[in-house]
Amino acid sequence: MMESDKSKRNRRRKAGAARREKGKRQGRGAEVFVPTDPTTVIARLEARAETSLLRRHPWVFRSAIKEIQGHPEQGATIELVGPEGEWLARGAWSAESQIAVRVWTFDSDEVVDREFFRSRLDAAIRVRSAYFDVDLERAGRLVNAESDGLPGVVIDRYADCLVCQFLTAGAEAWRGPIVEELQELLPAISSIYERSDVDVREKEGLPQRTGLLAGSEPPQTIQIVENGYRLQVDVRNGHKTGFYLDQRGNRAAVADLASGRDVLNCFSYTGGFGVAAMRGGAARVINVDASAPALELARQHAQLNELDMERMEFVEADVFKFLRGCRDARREFDLIILDPPKFAANRNQIDQACRGYKDINLLAFKLLRPGGLLVTYSCSGHIGRDLFQKVVADAALDARRNAVILEWLSQADDHSCNLAFPEGFYLKGLVCRVDA
Ligand code: SAH
Image (cartoon, rainbow, N blue to C red; front, side, top):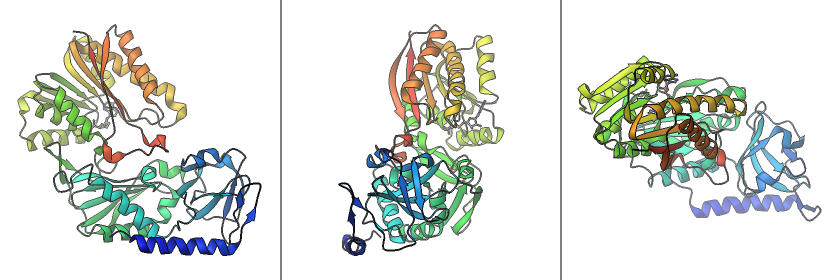
């Protein structure tokens, strides 16, 4: 249930009144923030460092902080003020990460308490009905961290199971209340499971953690429906929260392109793109992945969807080697999908990642028959669209293929990216057609 507008107004009025009582001194044009509560922690920013907060970007780097009044605990809510002492935002303190504060609110009247989380969660969940149909598809992203005003909080739904990731100190501090609010907001949910086994937690000084948070243990696999085909998700062991939900729309795009084509699905994982291609009428699909368990699930997905196994292959191999082998054997395909894991985990890895992208794209271009299609992705947030397009262009050049861009693809709608937070946009896909 959403907090009523009236109670929200009252709460805000109270918060506003409390601050007015505090009294405010006038700084040079800006109102200086003076807390009534002496335990309030205030971080004052360096000159000009406030610009990004004024643009509502929710991160404050440690280097942007001039001084801190007080001793914040890991995950505590602190106030951010500008160089003149003017109030800017309220956010969660991370003691270890380079991102020292992540903003919960830019509204000085908004109190960060349990109600705050309830209303943010509720708002995020409500908009999702426009993106996916829980009854029909059963799966989708409910909360997308910063882009939903909840830094560090990711919540995916798989049928009656929610899978949560708490990625930051602030998210960790509110983990209990968030889980309790989820139970109230979504009473039909029977299990809430945690998959905070993500590297970024280490940057926050947090251990990785998985396990049941509420309700009953989720089943071994949960069946979901994507673009009309069925898929099984293992929320305990699957990648991310169990599945790559961010590629839902892009698998539909591949289905539309696949008719009559000989398809090579590289980095297939559990075969989502392969199933989509077969459903779209592909002549053949070869799924290639380095993981045997993922390929076993891909095989099961083919059976579950009653696909013609005679026209499908599942190859356990390193894609780089496999593509070279195909080149040497002069094998050809009409549609090649490249959906590799994140090659650049940080800025320092950008060059190396570009070499990796160029390598596989170059080989793929060489393997395409005249008029063939390349559907190529990068999920590295550090590699922007322009750079990715340049790398793919370089690959085509070196492969001596002329190609046109048919379409740009990106992450599914429920993985929405807030305009103020461009880092939230990470998945880029390019559909190219080589000359006939
Ligand atoms: N396309 C998939 C998601 C791919 S995730 C989907 O739609 O669900 C990346 C996959 O690449 C993982 O399954 C991982 O096992 C595989 N992988 C990573 N490096 C690889 C390599 N060098 N060769 C083959 N597979 C690799």
